[in-house]
Length: 394
Image (cartoon, rainbow, N blue to C red; front, side, top):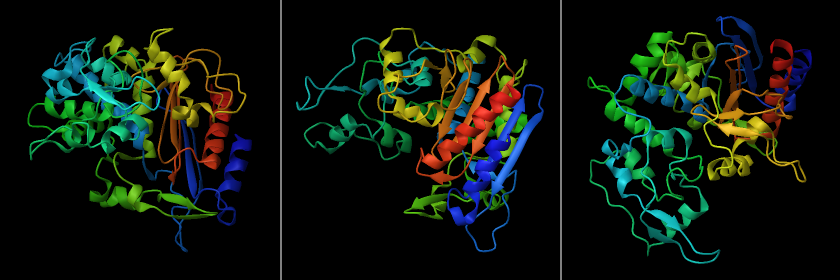
């Protein structure tokens, strides 16, 4: 790991203004910490302390798989089924139209989906037709006053108000990474039972059983977690400046992230016990030759922190698939990061990335708190860490 550590030391030297700090962790299925390394400072303050190896970090999208574990627990308990329409519990989805246009330059039009209804499996695999408000077609829809918009009751859930957007393809007939996760959160909250909401369900059924005592979705409300955070920073020209407002959502200590990775790669996970449901997290779920897998592979910018930036004249998209946890390497290894076949990996906005391989009993995490996403310096360091780790421990 010497090459990685030397490179990280250069990047975190304050005079170089590369990154503020980073934490790297490698664990195995027996619960051992094989590697735990830090470099850099805790903050930009003049009297900043060296980075705490067990700092808390915001995971952003790198924590979405935890919501998926929660809803799969409900499947395990018989509360709902993977392939039943979810409109029984999320009736708002039943009224979402499909948006399309006949040709480039033509106006958008809305019509009703006719092939399939949205199921939990669609939500988990981002094949529901839901995309993101940032997608160009949805931006056009939102800006076009001539197209009808949904109306909401005053007490409608904020997620319903924010993510009731048209589908960009028939459910099950494509792939679009986006707001399916928010509807899944709402689903968990509505089905949690015993008066629990989404946050309470996660606490009682995931964080508490694993002893994840330094994890919360409300970091500002927990003094210990907030004060231990690796400070969020962003690039401003050649400088790094504070970006504390971006520290929000699921925030965990490095050890806590290690606990959930260890549980998932262990021979006998505690969070999910039915093998078929665990397989959803680790085995590719998109059918070969399907529109869904072609959509996934053609949108490489969506996962370039894991697979490497798109290079002009490159050899085409890597052989990847999608699971209910993230991106799966199907064959060979990713040239940029050395991530081998059979590994599931995903990334988060503050340049956080994890990888898990059940067959090898190995998982790893690289975490910094730097925005914007896909920062070139952070991406190169994460790839160097992954390559060194798979070579050393894999």
